[in-house]
Amino acid sequence: MADLQQIGDLAYGGYLLPADSLSASSTCYLAGTGTDISFDLLVIARFGCEVHAFDPVPAAADYVRGAAAHEPRLHFSPVALWRTDEELAFHAPRTEGFVSHSAVDMHGTPVAFRAQGRSVASLMRERGHTQLDLLKISAEGSEHAIIEGALADGIHPRVLCVEFAQPAPRQQR
Image (tube, rainbow, N blue to C red; front, side, top):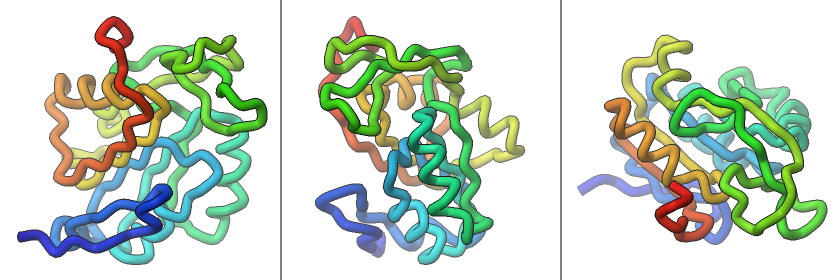
């Protein structure tokens, strides 16, 4: 049985992780920083590994630049994890001022901006990673697309943490 350890607040953005599955040499991809990288920083602090964080929202990029300035093991890219490499349209959140935008138009809102989507496999090749130890996804409805793309590309992370924003109708996947 894995030694499960709570990393972060389970009520908001935290997860139980099998501590014996991660180490300082682990490769971690964390999608969806928003304006809270506490989980990302706690993974670094607990396991000593480098974290690759991704979020296409301009406000998230601004936030991460300041909040992670002290942590050289956090590598941020302003791209969206997706099933393939392609430009995506991101729809505004339902509540004005909220940071999370959706590539699958969860709320029937207008397009707010466009950003590059990247597959997990493509990012791993680019960074020279052959194994993914932790994949965390908080992607406002894109979870299914990211997971399906990764599996189709033969990517099988040792640990998978997913926040499902909503069940996606089959035609949206």
